[in-house]
Image (cartoon, rainbow over all chains, first blue to last red; front, side):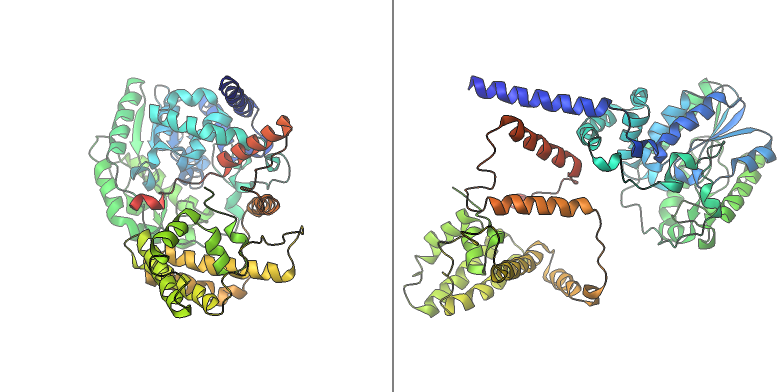
Length: 307
Length: 212
């Protein structure tokens, strides 16, 4: 029995050692080129871009849907686009950007509609990889349940470091990689690419989560205490998906207008025909980016007074 | 008690049922088939008793017609072997008993039995009969002649690896019964298995027997 316990203990001790080696081994070449490493670029922008500025916070609907230079030139204010991927979760995005806001900044939230349904707002694998690969210090932004999920994910993450295709023979991520961002944080490589056909989203497959709007209200207060301001706008969305989900989106719109934060435009204003879409419900091609940015400029000039 | 004896290396459905869920089939044999008369009353009585067993097995799995249909399906596969007296051909042998590789005939037999079992599982796991029929219908539609989507090649590598391990160990109580005596090699295999579980684990699926 003693021998069995000793051997079992040794087995698990070695297993924990293997996991520890995997966790603390630097990010693999494949992972280092991924979109998630865009956070380092965007954090650098947040540190070095002088205030006052517009800081856009959301997932890829803003990285694939904004022309920040156009915004800067029209509004005369610096712009930082922090968008990476929606699956990182809005909770983390808000907590993370809070560290970088300064007096005079305006944070503009443009969350994907999925954030308001189910547990999407808490993030998924991209969040865990962001913490483990990109910035371990950002674990402080996680809630207890997120930390537990991160812990459960850690063995998978550790063992992934030993996969050969993390080092050789991996595909270039192209527009979905960290190198796809321009100096404002916009994804721009797809601006010259042909769009890819899209199937409209048929639903959010989860129930509406009212706590998300509460979190946004709390975030507004936190920004205010730092001398910054929050505004809300709507994500770019393809017409087919909007048609299928307009009741749910209307619910989100109504809820966002109850928290006393300036709202720029309305959901329908940021719905775009398929000819403006790149390859996903939230991603715009160059024409769509220009149109969306133009509408945002108009709404910003009115500062949330139009509907 | 060994409950599964490499059933997917079976050469016919009768052998499959001697190798699949042995504890359950043994119970059915001892408490239903034999009390009903077993195979002592001639071929027709044996056929009746066999049909009863498969029907009961279907009902045993749950309150859904798909389970009953699955039982009936297997009954119709088994009964011809019974009537032809071919249900006990491979009772004491293992496929490719004294060879490393199976013959072409054995390969085809295993392939056919595997496919028949798979079709049964489609019926078994479907929500209802209509879904099962639709699923099976789609297997044999024009997409059969189109280029397959291969997906992650690692999956095929793992399938091949596990197939080889199972094949090499098919004469044993279980495939890994005779592990290498070298502890480093043995533990290396264990850690590789643990890593594979962590890397390829999917979303938790509900255990199908929880419905009982």
